[in-house]
Length: 187
Image (cartoon, rainbow, N blue to C red; front, side):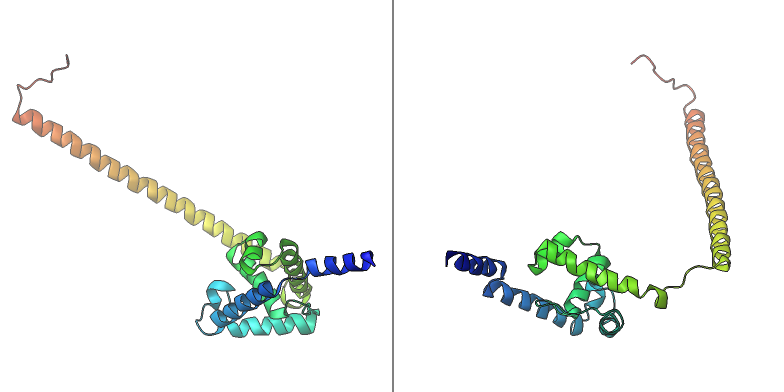
């Protein structure tokens, strides 16, 4: 009988408390409200609400991303985008949403794998022509930056020459106005 009680206790320990579940739900509802009403979706998930909903549908229908016992697909995708779009660490997002690091990481990788599975449909591999265009653009950019460096150096040289001439003119004018003033070097 003791072993049955021990297993029940262990199962209860792994379950989040009512307070924690309510907190998680409140955080998620606040995030949803921010996404839809305050137009903060660009700051939080880096896309519009409509694009977010479309992405969630695609990941569900085409990639088989499913909700878990404690997290909806929308919540998984929103947290994934929150991490990726803001360069957050999973540890920080885990703390923010009161989830374990392992759960956050697990859901992150589930969404990542689902997005990667869309590669063939939505990501076009570069062709030889694309590579030629990229090389041409790179070459043009390097030429432009070298021209800017030369012009920048020329501008700096001209400015330096102006400063030097100004100092020389001031020294000459001082000498002309006060010819008998000698500089005392024995200080």
